[in-house]
Image 1 (tube, rainbow, N blue to C red):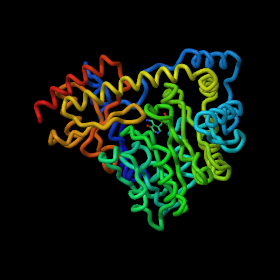
Image 2 (cartoon, helix red, strand yellow; image 1 turned 180 degrees about the vertical axis):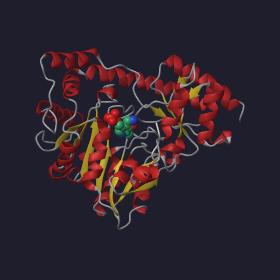
Image 3 (cartoon, rainbow, N blue to C red; image 1 turned 180 degrees about the horizontal axis):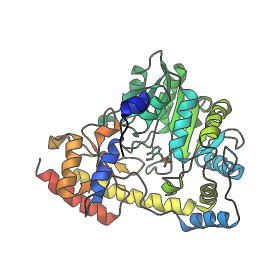
Length: 391
Ligand code: PMP
């Protein structure tokens, strides 16, 4: 087909956004045979059968139409009860919870409802690749706050304070973190919240990996004193319930903020997929045992992979959550992109260069250990051989 000149037709915003650095590696890896992939950020489990069955049953019963804009009330009630039980968070199903098309859409409508041109959004980095582009799409300015390996990639109050200026409106926090696996304890969150309150900032807290916390139970910043009114919690079903393809997440937060987000949601999405919402209802009602089993399995694989990574010469802190290890590759003398490219070509192991996750990511690679033990063992063997040649 003849191509129009994209210069004339594409918006400046579309042109200014870079494609995701992760995609490039997926595309390369997909073209090759025999690749062990530690690249993807999703569970290696399929969704539990009872959840699938509940979705089938909903279709058989004719629940194939739109739900309420904010999601099935029944599901919001379950989410409200779940957040209360697991994380001591109090949200009313009617006005303080919105079911979204994945946590991805939750992030999008939250920024669109809260950010004006000129507003700066602090983002603790290394961080999930979507935050900065979504802030830009919303017209805001992303402002990275780098975290460091010395501190196990935990954001400190000092780091936060030093990046606040008069344009700072809010901070995006994601703990347990993608890509570092870092988690924050209650005391650490308390220190951050003191700074956040002092500067009157809003918090967008992406807690999609909350269930995947291995050494202590997850603490939500919204559960700390005087934080609920300035925090919007984002979560979803993709990670804990192995439901990435169902595209279901949610927002929980103060009514005035959530109702503004609902306006955007009702015009741009109408509602999250109704069939998936019926599956999610079952996940919350009867999914606990399977979540616990999956968490135990990730914990075992984390312990194996991190120990093995240190053994083969890639120093790696023990991540407290999510399913990523973030070892240092500095000793090899390669950039993270060179490391990932050469490792894929020479040894057929796919990892993601740390540089794609923003400030502080160079010098590291992200390895997802949501892969079979056999795949992890093969990967370690191959990475070990690759590293040995360079040390
Ligand atoms: N937040 C983080 C930190 C993630 O890692 C991901 C998925 N990789 C998402 C949000 C998006 O999740 P969902 O599938 O619910 O859109």
